[in-house]
Length: 304
Image (cartoon, rainbow, N blue to C red; front, side, top):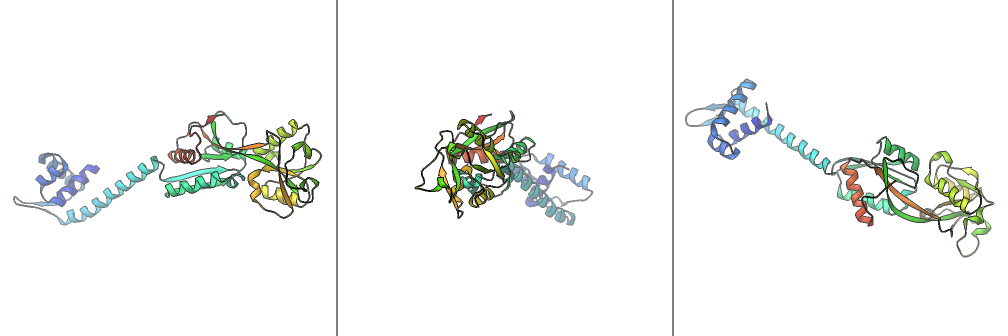
């Protein structure tokens, strides 16, 4: 049994006239009659009572009509679901992001805009380190990654969403925290104990801090490690050391902490949107296009 047989049957059942049904279907009457007869033979029931003057549905035909309409409605629904999924309007989009991403206004605004435009798409948001984001993209656990710069495998491509300055995070009791809030060079922290992410965590900021410190002529002493920026800020407030974080973290107000701009020219951190070069997800492509439109960036990005 084919779907066209159901459509032919429904047309005849609604018209109760083979000639008018054939006209509505755009076919000639003899083939329509043959197809209805073939359908009756296949299901083993007479669907129509035929006389020389009229055509009527049999009892079996009346029951079959309800089921046939339901089947075609379900097929149409399934086709619509597939079509919307292909257009990126339905399904699930998995996004991995570093803990600092929500503090950059570009990302939450893009997620909000995407939800408004594609309300039927479920956004599965996962917080992870930059290294974990890259790994998850490679094994296709996620489709979109928001991360800090790291060397990327050839299979991935990045789009720079924004840049923001880095700031020194100091205890309010620290000598460098006194005064009007002027900036400082990283070299001023050369003798200080640092509170920072562990190297094993895979934060893109770790390699950047080492590079900045090397340019400033010292190697930082990591006295205390913590996997969360909030914990790092809290430990700085407690006097365990100093730290360096993106300026967006200044939105976190903690008693006993002062933020000071870093004056080193290279003390700037980017936020990347990363995806596979062979990206096939229509939803991911729609998200990237929407983000590009909202931020004015190029949706094609730059390959790493």
